[in-house]
Image (cartoon, rainbow, N blue to C red):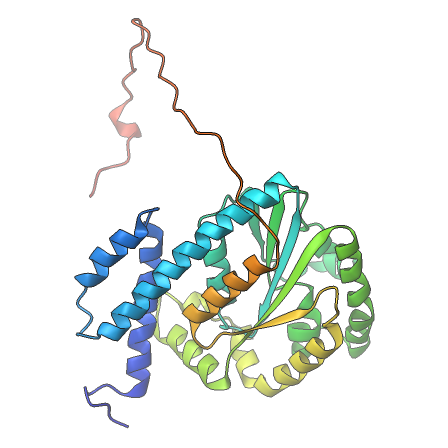
Length: 310
């Protein structure tokens, strides 16, 4: 199929994907006056005359900045009230979990909000109680922990790839409701998200990673094998959602084919799950620097300095 402007459908999608990558860099450059900066930037941006796209990007940024401001208020509330918050992010490879996590943590204090992304278990961990290595990552009072994949590896990737037995999967399904109820009874706020994408969208995102040398590191042999086993993952996901969707810790599905909408929807929903309020902070006054007449700044050897190539 030939597009009117000579682009094929994949090239058109790829162009939009590259624009999204640039937007990620732009997000980091804006401060609290991001709205004005954004208007100046996009008003002068050469977007091939696509006014609707410019407006869409501007709306996305504005809403993202607003939601991130609310996340800062939530963070203050969590610290003030010594809340313990755990958020699980699950979904297929390339579903956009990492992008959503990045937007949540982007402007938060890493001492308050941290990400737990555990590697495959080592020999010792494989002999432990299954949940043991995840328990060590749980928050203390005043902390938020975002799990980029979690104990749900067992009924998902481990099951589909044959890294565990069906008996172990069945034991997981028996144990996990009790485990999560115990977490909730202990005072942990537990929120579980599944990022949902289509077969076609995952294919496109994998192809983008193959074609982009900067992104190829994201594509592991396990990812490629998971692509082949799409239907097995679907069956495993369906059973997992059915058997672990408990009233104390229910699943929430994030429609994630549109990355930007998925991020905004996820953050907005996360904010709605905790009844927080904005706290008043005393004004911060920068103290005057002390100055002493005998103070001199010592000179350092030139070879200690990084060369100023730029």
